[in-house]
Length: 138
Image (cartoon, rainbow, N blue to C red; front, top):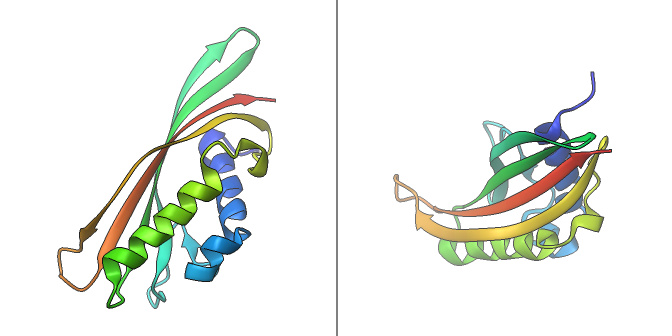
């Protein structure tokens, strides 16, 4: 079975990020859908990959809301988490040609927003970053 919009996008984004040296210098290849129980900090996690599908003439398209979280537990937690999402922004914003989505054309990949906050347990910081994505079938 072929991947849908959301899974194809997530796979393409992950591949781009684990090959982007400015990001891997910060988190290595720790980009997860579901992090392992013994996860090493800092790391990046997919939170929301939500396609809203529509028909366009002879193709099907989707507007996808994409949100990721950077988790840090270092002494410079807010700074580190923010550096991670800044690297993600640089790797992805308007960089459609660098992301491969098998079975789909990636039309637009636009940075929306980011922010960092202290974790509820007080042990670290989490930075959230979101993108708006437009895709269509090949």
